[in-house]
Amino acid sequence: MDWNELTLFEQLSNIAGEVKRMVDCRTRFTTGKAAKDYYDFYFAKVKELVGRTIDDPKNIGRGQELLDEVNEIERYGRGEVEGEYILRYWDQYTKAIS
Image (cartoon, rainbow, N blue to C red; front, side, top):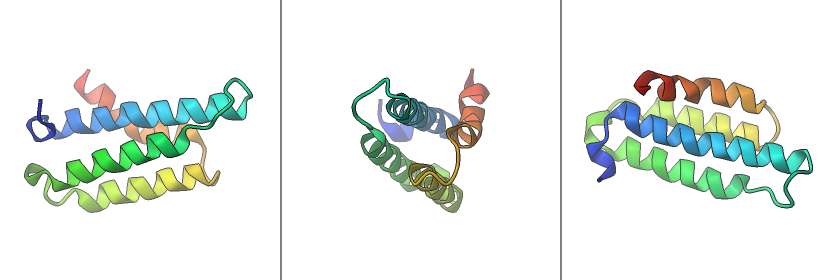
């Protein structure tokens, strides 16, 4: 299925899944349960999907909100905010389509 065929909430829920994997991987790394931190890998996927969501014509006017959240994820990557903070924002989309 083409990304643009998904509803905005479906797109955001898919992004939320990548964000959750990113936070989970970082947590496993920082607690010594994983040898490698895959934050950069998942962050690149999140940025790609956010870009595709912004470019989707039906989502006009949502770009700044999504870019702001990417900035928050970058803050998480630098250790400035907790993973729970990031997940609270993105979980709302997963719950909305459940």
